Image 1 (cartoon, rainbow, N blue to C red):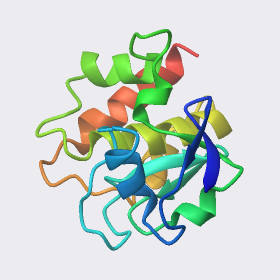
Image 2 (cartoon, helix red, strand yellow):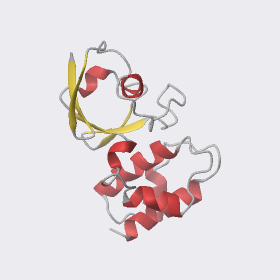
Image 3 (cartoon, rainbow, N blue to C red):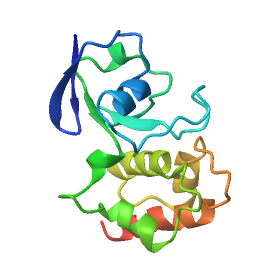
Image 4 (cartoon, rainbow, N blue to C red):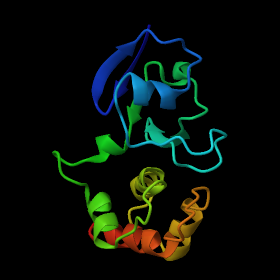
Length: 151
């Protein structure tokens, strides 16, 4: 039995400790924010935060989060409403197909937690490992910078 905090709440699951975290989040805890993209830790669609650090949940085994704190896109909400960063994504129309959006937001939140006032180049560098096939990168960068202005 593996136990960890999920979006601030203690949870337990009897799933095998080698099961990918993404699978456990989707199937056992019905978290639909993180997505299965490439399955090889290359695209960033599956990003979650573990103890405040971005982790690619498609390749992280469940055992890697035992006793730790996992935050998904859903956990970034602010009292049931979009967080400042999520609202900035909405305001900037920073999602075209939306498949990469969860991972982009999680990665951007990790950046803003470390650096509340990043520059354009720091945002682009932080998001470099997240793939967006629709070409919404400029709107995504604007959304992150907009959220940083409100900090």
